[in-house]
Amino acid sequence: MMFEEYNGKVVFVTGAASGIGQAQAQRFLENGACVFGFDKQEEGLYDLSALHKERFAYYVGSVSDKEAVAAAVNQCLAQFQTIDILLNTAGMLDGYTPTLDTDEALWDAVMDTNVKGLYVVTNAVLPRMLKRGKGVVVNIASIAGLVAGGGGAAYTASKHAIIGYTKQLTYDYSRSGIRANAIAPGAIKTPMNQADFVGDGETATWVAEETPAGRWATPKEVADLTLFVASNAADYMHGAVLPLDGGWTVK
Image 1 (tube, rainbow, N blue to C red):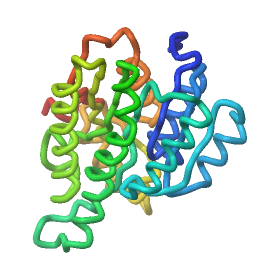
Image 2: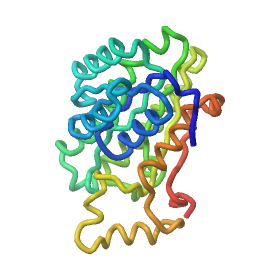
Image 3: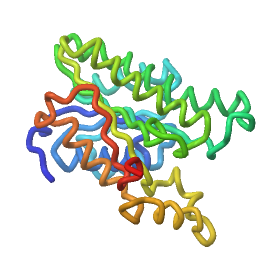
């Protein structure tokens, strides 16, 4: 799947050091875009930079840190002049912890990354998009934003919040040229889910068996859907939540 329209476009990706975010960065780079990565971990960002020196740049920091986000956005603008597409992909799990076992520290950490971080990054990028009268935002939600069982209390609440935020964002700013949608992945084999494959991989096997498609997906599959959702072909798509879950939510 190739999109010539991404030649010269600038994509800002959070969580770009690994997993879905890294796959998104790679696929947009392969389609000719300039990509700016933002993540707390530098290793994966450095690897992308080594491969795409002129079209990839990055900043190391937390999405919930307003100063770090502002510095990253300013660096992106200084290097690439604009931001056409924002991919809010950074996130963290909560170990499927029920509410009575969720202490405030875990709740706050999940909300700071998954919800506040998305809000902070969006608010840093959105004014630039509004000034140009055009911009695309793709938020990574989860099947946990649609049904129970995809995470614990904090994670499920945070992903529901992302879906609500996405809908309100496009509702408020679509007449100003902003288009926001969300992707809700199911079982995606990423470093964040590595614990499911530890030992005999019993959890990973169970998840695959419970998924109608009978398998886990790869981060590239999420990235490929992102290419479409961010493209001109999806220009009339506003506030949609697209499950990419192998049929999990049809059960």
